[in-house]
Length: 93
Image (tube, rainbow, N blue to C red):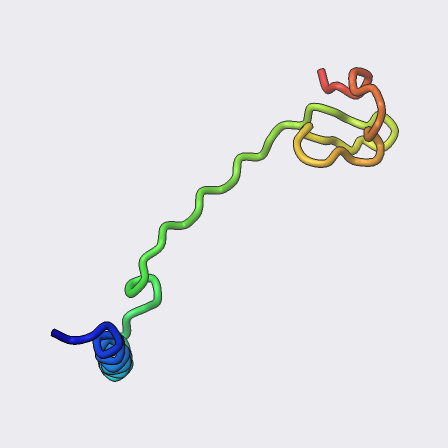
């Protein structure tokens, strides 16, 4: 039966062999992919399909500055014109 130290040495050797084999095979696989893309003229969308993101829904303004007409949805950091003030007078009806 192998000792613990011997098994660790074997594991280290196997890990190195695995890493080398993976590197060599991945380089070959990449060359094959590049050759096929070039040969058939595939686009990035065809090779790596992605769904376009849905347009973000614009949130309606809840507050309006009567002096400048600037608006704020009530989300995120409040703008200077409303920060620290009572918000009721700025509510959009």
